[in-house]
Length: 467
Ligand SMILES: Cc1cc2nc3c(=O)[nH]c(=O)nc-3n(C[C@H](O)[C@H](O)[C@H](O)COP(=O)(O)OP(=O)(O)OC[C@H]3O[C@@H](n4cnc5c(N)ncnc54)[C@H](O)[C@@H]3O)c2cc1C
Image 1: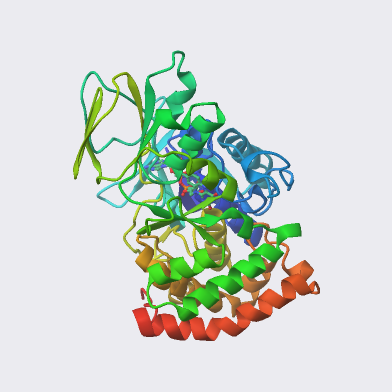
Image 2: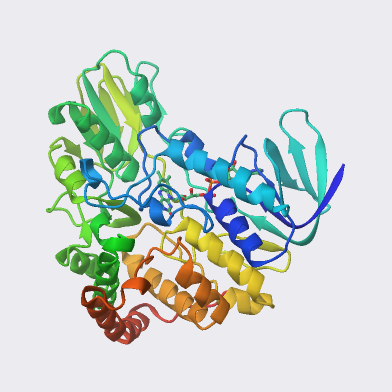
C-alpha cells in the first residue's frame, strides 16, 4: 500500500505533537504522523508513577490546547507555584489533542503501532507491529524526525553496570509495587530522577537514614520559584535580568552558576561541593531541604557492579546491609546530542532551539517552517541550543539561545506567534508590562543584554551557524 503526504512526522511524543499542532495552525499542509507506541505521549507512557513535569503545565504541551487548569498549588513541595502535571495527565492530554484537534482538522492522519524506517533505496516505509503490513509513504515536502531528542529513561534503558544474581535492582517505576519493606534503599544516580525518588521515599515515611544515595557527581538545579508564568510572571522577568547579569560578569560556566546561586536562581544539594553538571533540572526549595536530610551520600564515581550488600564503584567499594533495594536512576534523561542541522532539504530534525523547552522548541520550528521560504534562512533562525550536561557550557548555551531568539524576533510572523503562544515560558509578561514589578526587571534585563553577549563572545567565541 502507498500513502502520500506533505510531511511525514516520525514520533508522536511531545515534540511531534507540538510541531504538528503549530504547523496545521499556520498552514494547510497535509501530515501523516507515525509512532511505534499505541498512543501519542512518547516517553511519558513509561515514566515512573510519581514523576511530574519540571516546568509548569501552563506552558507545556501544544499551543492550541491548555494542559491543566493554570492553578497555583496550595500544598506540598510545589506550594505557591503553578501546577505540574503527572505522566498520566500528560498522556491523556496528548490523546485528547490527537482526537479533538489534530484528526478533526482533516489535515492529519495518525498511524500508531507503526515502526518507521528509511530503506536503502530512500523509501519511507512504515510497518504495523500488529499485522506486519508495510505502507510506503510518498513525502511531497519533508520528513520530520521527532525522535531525535527522545530522552533516556529508567524503565527502558539498560544499566551500564553489572548486577549480581542476588541483588535487587529496580527502576523507580517498581517502587510502588513493593509489598515488604527492605533493609534499606540505595538510590543510584545524581540527576532529577534520583532527586524525585529520594523525595518520594521521604514523603512516604522512609527514614532518611535508611537511604543511601550514590551520586557520581553533583548537579546544579534551577529554583522553580523563578520560572513561573501568568500571575507570577514577575519571577520570569527577574529570572531573565539575573541570568543576563550573571552571563555578563562571569568568566566560566562555574562562575556563572555560583553567581546564579548567590541570586537565588540555582540550587545545589550540598553546600560544600561545587557541582560540575547542569542538565536543566528544576526543583523547589522545599524539595532541596528534604533531600539535604539524607546524610548517607557516597561519592566514589560511577557504579560498576551491584551485589547483595555491596556496591563497586570506579573509586572504591561500599558495604551495605543485605536485603537492600537498589533503585536505578542512572538513565541520563536528556541525552547529549551531536549538533545536527534542523532544516535540511528533505528533513527537519526537531531539536531544542530554546533552553530546555521541548514543546516550545518544536512549535517554533513549525512556525518557522510554515512562514519562511528558504532552508538557509530557516536554519539561521533555528540555532540548536545543546545541553552537554557540563556546567562549563552555560556560557555557550546562553549565547546560542540569545542569538537564535534575537534572529527570530526580527521575523514578524514568528515574533507575533511567540508573543501569543501559551508555550512561551514568559507567558503573561506582555499583559503585565505596566506593573513596575515586571517592567523594572525587564529594563534591567535589556541593560544587561549587550554586556552579556560581549562577555560571552570574549570568553567562548561567537555563535556558529550550521550552514
Ligand atoms: C522526567 C522528565 C521530565 C521532563 N520534564 C520536562 C518539562 O517539564 N519541560 C520540558 O520542556 N521538557 C521536559 N522533559 C524533556 C522531555 O524530553 C520532553 O518534555 C518531551 O516529552 C520529549 O518528547 P519527544 O517527543 O522529543 O520524545 P519522546 O517522548 O520519547 O517521543 C518520541 C517518540 O518517537 C517514537 N519513535 C522513535 N523511533 C521511532 C520509529 N523508528 N518509528 C516509529 N516511532 C518511533 C517513540 O515511540 C516515541 O513515542 C522531561 C523529560 C523527562 C524524562
